[in-house]
Length: 260
Image (cartoon, rainbow, N blue to C red; front, side):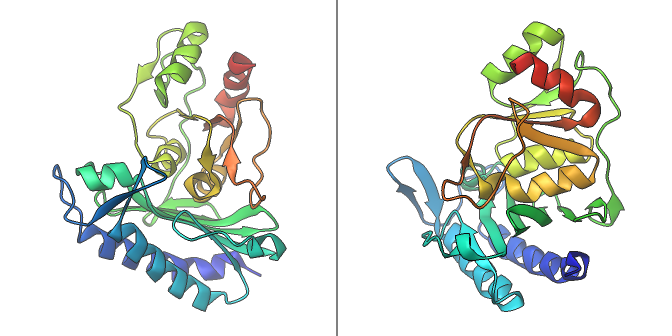
């Protein structure tokens, strides 16, 4: 299958989902969408659920035989038997969305045999749609994007948990710390477009947080692995991941040595 042929159709679906979600967003104010909490601490809004349902209906129609994994759908593990699997976070950065912070997005990836081959990260408030298909470049809207050419960790622009940024700073020296980016998918996408040099992710992220941004970063010339340098594998029974590091290939070896 040429996954590039699917890209325009998926992009259109993702953008429609983003426009629907954005109707309930209030810049700088709490959303009007109903809010409740999963497991006592993780927020979800009725907009998350509505967006998830819209995406599931449209994407399943596009590829009826593909499996499905989403933050907002109960996982029945049927996806483990499928070659193709949709991986979806209907709103990545729900806390940002509900509090009026603009850094949230719609994140959709298609996996083939456990690796992302198509990815979409759409940030409606910023009007930025990052997308990529395997071996066909990465884009933000209609422009090809590339990771930053910055070749040293010193004075690199970095975003991530304070404790991880601190570990890098202790070894690399002065860094340019950028404001925290609540959405993990957007954090990685901004490495892909060269807006930041390093994106760090604490443990317990899920497939749906990172899969779409992973292929966008890869097609933009970057790389994301565990902080041990291990390749990320998707569509396992356990969808969580260890601490991760995303950067250009120029910086990645130095970054991994710090954590090692």
